[in-house]
Length: 116
Image 1 (cartoon, rainbow, N blue to C red):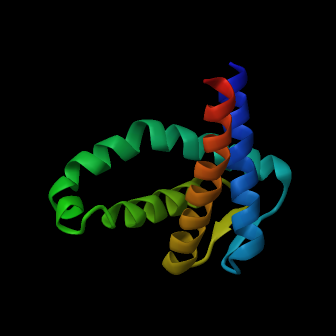
Image 2: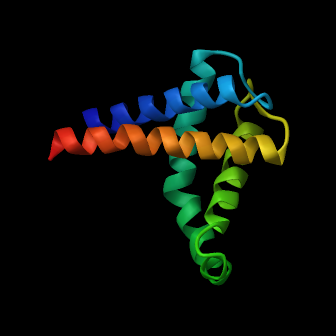
């Protein structure tokens, strides 16, 4: 349970970092970032695997680069549902998803070292 909450806080921090670095991403409050992180986590758990499987030929053809576009699409989907979380363009969603992915990967790397 502690690991889930830790990862949730990491995604929340990554969303806040993305909103600071990408001009087209706006987060109204910390609560909005927490809700966006929760929804992004749920979408990544349930919808992303289906999208990856459906776009597998395109993903293989692009050597996995198409996954970044799926991540951007899912971030824009979260912005559609969470009031106070705004993504203004696809480019902002793409850059934001890259930043969120890198921050999350970096933080999870250190969490995995500590838990092993």
